[in-house]
Each structure stands twice: as C-alpha cells, then as structure tokens.
Image (cartoon, rainbow, N blue to C red):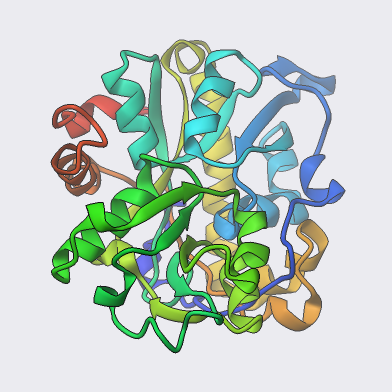
Length: 330
C-alpha cells in the first residue's frame, strides 16, 4: 500500500448480497499457516481479517500472482472484527491480521504484544463505512437528533465503529448515551435493518451497497470523518514477537500489497471485476461498491486522532502514545 489512498481513482460503489468470503478467498494461495516454510523457499502465512472490501488489495495480489512473486502462500481466515483478530494473533491461530486502529490501541492498553507494521486503507469520501437508517424507520429518522432513543448496530461493541457513531452524534448535539448500541456481525446487518430490528447501523462495504439496495438510507456517507478527514481506518498487524522473527515475511507481504495497489491505481475497474470471485457480491452489484483508498504507509500522526478520541469516549482508559503501536519493518 505504498500508494497515496487519497489520490486513488478507485472509489466506486458496488454492493454484493450477503458478502462473506468465498472458498476462493479463504484459500488464497495455500492451506498452511504460521510463517512456516513451503516448497522451494515459499513461506506460508495465515491472515485473519473481517469479510469486507478492505481486503481488496489482498484479492488483487492473489489474482495477479503477486504473493507467489514474493515467495508467499497466503490463507485467509474470516474474522468479524479487529477485537476478534487480536486474540487470534495472540493464540497463533493467524500470523497477520487486519484490524481497525482502535483494536490495536486497546491491545496496547492491555499490554498485549500487538502492533501495526503497515496501513491497510484510508476511508474514502463515499459511502464505504457509512451510517445508514433502516427503510422501516427512514420516514421518522431524517436527522441525527431523531436517533435518540433508538438502537444502532455496530460490528463490535466498545470498539471503532461505536466510537465513530458516538463522536458523530455528539458533534451534532445528540447525547451518545441516549442511543442503545448492539453488536452485530456485518453479514447479519442487512437482515436486521430490513426487518426493522435496528433503527440504524454503521455498516461497511460490500454490505453498505447491499443494505442501500434493500432500501436503507445513508445518513452519513463517511461518519469517521469526525476522527479525521480521510483517516487510516485499519492496519496490518502482528505480534511483536512474530515480527521479530519474520520481519522479512512481513516485508514481502507488504511489498506484494504495494504492487497490488499500484496495479489497481493503473486499472481502476480491476478490483470490482474480481470481487464476485472472492466474495458473494453479484457481478451486477460489484461495480457499485465504494472502495477504500488502499496504501501501506502510516505514521504516528495517522494514529493520533484515534488515540485522542478513544480516550475521550472511554474506549481506552488513557491516551495511547501513537508511535507505540507501530513497528517499522526497516
């Protein structure tokens, strides 16, 4: 992700029905795990990440054989969110994970051996991670103030998306305590919104496109702009102990993603064309998904607004020094 996401031409909307990773995505290049050696010097790596389009450069790297070119075999394990990726890393169930920045901050406050070694993506201006209102409640909920007293779904409680919702509401004069939050996996959000079991949700692509196609209304296309204009939402992370022994593997993984980012920048329609292979999005909806701005570069300045907001809203018990969650591969 050495690209500048903000300059990326790939922001387009597409949706897919219930988008869960398919067999093609789950087995990206190989079934082995653990940074172990494979045939002819190939290293096998298991990656844990949520089933969202933030994995787009991973799909591109696989389909363009970029992992193979960097002597890697990658297997992807679908995990709901960063809060679940952290224990998977701690238990050695996965080698590398993709997580929102908040989960890494929380891990640091719990003195867990987890750090970011590359950015995953920045949030675009369009509705990738969006605040949407159920079609059953859209007539009554036209402003943020009308969300008071309602139930909002987030993929994980007391984590990044609840923080984003609370900061969004507070900035618009709504007391976050007046809203009830429930945790709901992304793939379950379309059904809950359609049935009116929740009034609103913070939903990520490709589920954003799915729920909009079912009638939900976008209240805010980029609620995390309350954190920063185009924040680094997620990073690639691993345990510091794993990185100390596999820095070369992490560097090759990042280099393959950088090549994928470059390819996607030169071929703006490519990721949308392969989404049906790696996810359950239909070819009809794939071209409508709003893609994130992929890039691997991150600095403490990218972490700072998350660290401040997390402490302000008691998601962490204090401000985490931004540099403390980043490990350099150099």
